[in-house]
Amino acid sequence: MSVPQYEIKDISLAPYGHEKIEWAYRNMPVLRQIEKELIEEQPFAGMKISVSVHVEAKTACLARALSRGGAEVALTGCNPLSTQDDVAAALAEMGIHVYTIHGDNDEDYIKHLKMALDFGPDIVIDDGGDFCMLLHSDMKHLVPNILGGCEETTTGVHRLEILKKEGKLSYPVIAVNDARCKHLFDNRFGTGQSVWTAIMATTNLIVAGKTVVVAGFGMCGKGVAMRAKGLGAKVVVTEIDPVKACEAMMEGYTVMTMDEAAPIGDIFVTVTGCKDVIVERHFLQMKDGAICCNAGHFDCEVNIKELEKISVSHKELRKNTIGYELPNGNTVCILAEGRLVNLASGDGHPVEIMDMSFALQAQSARYIVSQKTKLAIDVYQTPEVIDNRVAEILLETKGVNIDILTPEQERYINSWDF
Image: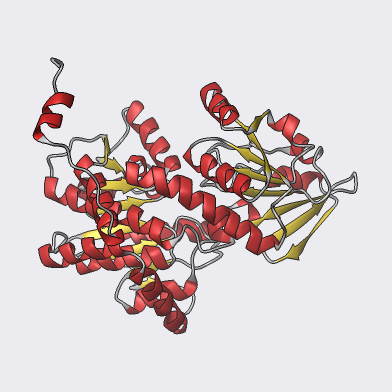
């Protein structure tokens, strides 16, 4: 079907969007290098790429790099509250197809996802699996034209693995999230810093001396806990995985259940990828003024519907902060409507972190094109050569040298006969 060039809030917002994009671009040396290669090679010439990622300045740099590599690019959001309308406007001026508006309701959010897919992509880049969901349900007719996809985040990879296990996966996908240069840095250092930047900017409250409850000790949870500890908080970790719980315990964190943590926490951050992590019985135990927020992908980890049901009133206490008064007189505060706090209440991960992640995305898309129809339907790890290339470029830009194995060392580590 025919779709418009863009559907955004206001094209006149573009000037400030351009400024944001250029600031990000100048601080993304790895993606800049990959972009130079794409411009020279034109691997995406004559191809269409649909992207569903948080629409802000770093993502704009990825979309522009793909475009300069020959692709026609359609971009939509993967979270209604993370879209920056000025960046969307700037991208529209650049000739990128953009379909997203900050604060989209559920209906418009799905509509914009579908518009970006109606574009007819050869490659899809997903963050959380919303494209994947549509391509395996309402928009199956587009699948025959898709060479492959790339998935940015843990939640999306989890969805893909379920589809694969059930024999329903319809196209090959590279799990970019699982690349070392993604999850070791983006998930841990990116989430760790950006979550606390957003919480502190939104609340203007101190972290030191408070009890912070981190639900989930995956790579993102590790980063959130690490930064909370560095800011002087007493950190409690809740987990369902006994090994991760042991890891948290041996890193010096207190480990307990959410039921045990609810009465003592001052700030709660969910980072699990699951639903109903904080529910009615937990809210009723919380201190007056307790703050809850989510750093997992979807807004179901903190069950706000149950909080609304039991509250006697609620009001905005501060931008992106809603206070719910409970029958016991205590108020529980929810940041960013329970959506990704670091993006809905902030600018997301630091630029240099997304430089690595989006360099991986651009190279993975190029890899899919290079393989054409050779890739069987499966979930693939990012090729090691791509992962290493990102790290090598980053080290070069920092002027850092590392050792290289001698031929004798190569022989030693690759032989069973010492």
